[in-house]
Image (cartoon, rainbow, N blue to C red; front, side, top):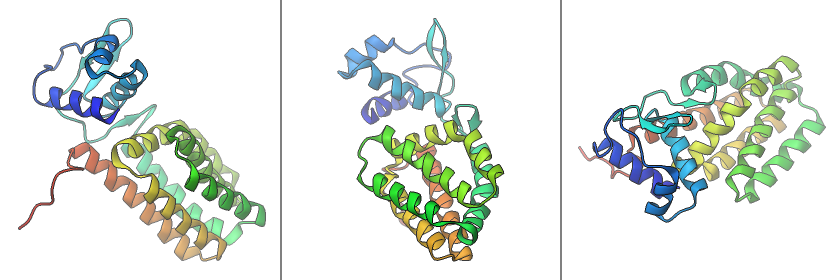
Length: 222
């Protein structure tokens, strides 16, 4: 998928496909890149999230911009929407969870950590990731927090998959999740807040890198 995405993104940003122009059909792209149509569809979904293309039912996929938008969209919410909500909800929620969590909450969080560390399928890992964040919200003892995370769950899953595929975030997220759970288990409110803040900072930084398309550029030297 990454190879298909890189090829299409380069062609769009290089002007091979003009703004307003139509991309080849899924079948044609599948043949061109020698991949399945499901791989092509996944690449097209990422291009749309980046704002480079737009899908018109029954007509095909058209180029919407020669460069990615700064605020990608995942389902019903933009990246900015998600980050604003998560910073105002999940950071304090981690602190509440450290103060109020029960043994059942800790057992489930440890179970999820173990499952995620051994999960190699992206779809499976993303589902566990969503459940992980919902469990922390529930451990806060305030059911309203869980409702908020449930509302944005689909968008979070789309964003998480996007970051894993293009930013190779899975291993880093596993380590960051473990830090969050360690702080919650210790009842360390400040440490839990700090760990969640660091996690969200890293997620946002990875997204910005992907949008700038400099994930694989060599570092600049002064």
